[in-house]
Length: 243
Image 1: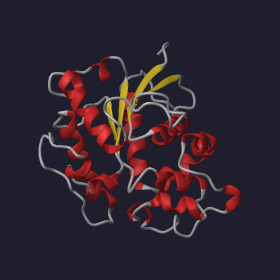
Image 2: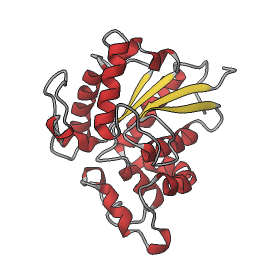
Image 3: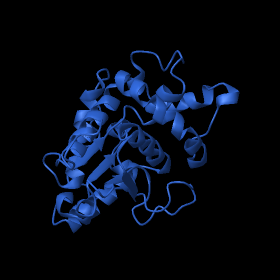
Image 4: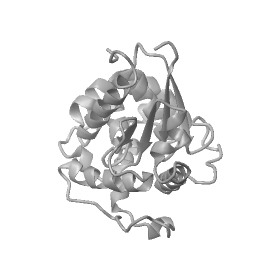
């Protein structure tokens, strides 16, 4: 393919987009690609960037999904989000499965399918249920080939900590993907290695996350699922799979 792959993402926030970009660099080392965040709107670098009319967080992803489905005639498959991009990543952390629509001031949900949280382990009991919820938001019955769902358990910070602090006793536990609020471990980092959940600090960690990704996906089930499904979507768009 002569032109760069066009990869778009709808994510909860700017730090999530930075983590995703690091992962894509790890998965596509020899492939030119352009990465654009459709949700939230604005720069992924500065947390002062506008989040647009849909807002940020999981509620922002919900509102963006519903708007895109409406634009596409009932499903995101017919929307400009797919017509202008080769692959669309939709990210929602698994802790959203424990939320209610009322907690997000949402009154137009297509059905009352939240909360959908299941006992963990295994993580995929909850993430499978959450994926069905997100597909409802997108107006889809099944996940289209060019859409990749990203549902880290319990949040994408579980992947970040596994990348930057794999020797931590809590992170090494078998139930790490089931631990609520993994980002709380950021504050437990040794002082010289500590960083905040903000775009500026995450950009400084981007290369570290990229290099560590193979070990993260080898250990964490939802990371492995995202990698497998993303590469399958890419392979469907180019003549040969990335090495």
